[in-house]
Length: 236
Image (tube, rainbow, N blue to C red; front, side):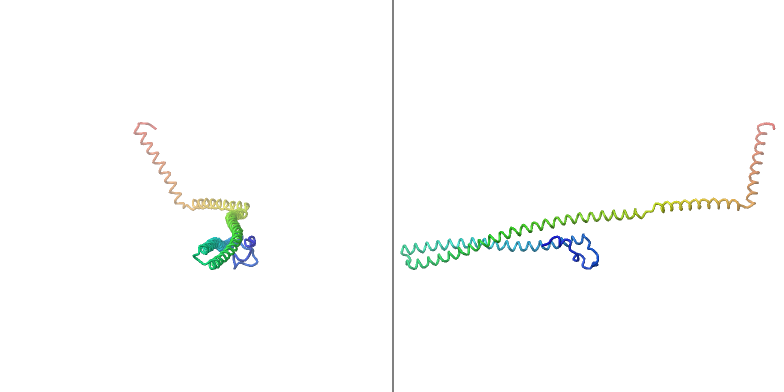
């Protein structure tokens, strides 16, 4: 299994993407991790199947060992019966021989089961090592993916900020402020001009009334002053 080929392959992360563009590294990595997890699932299934076969072989060894020992005990018992006369010796020998043949068959099966068990245990050790390595690889790439996503987020934010800063024209900003200042000064001058025009537009009647009002105040003040002096007995 070529892990790097799975991680960096192009075309499976987004089937509808343009062929002339490189795939998004994050999507490619995610697809690679998904592929690795599928391989891990298949490997675990195969590991379980092989382990089940090893268990069966181990059980076969134990079963045939016990059966062989049982046949041997039966052969002994048959010979003893032939010896004590409870069974004809010829029949005892025949049956004992058959029991020993059965024992030998069990020993052959047990030996084959031992060989198969040893071979399967060796395969299990290798498969278990590959599964552990695959798990470590997946964990490594998942951590790398987290780091990659964080770096992409930071670099994207930095790029956008730098792009905004690059688009800022100091000269144009100063020019804009100058134009704003000119506009404000123009508005202020215009307001003052309208004020002067308003004063100039005042009617002659207003000016006459203002002048008379000023004289009336002066005369009234003079009369009040004369009356106050007379009241106090102050001569002119």
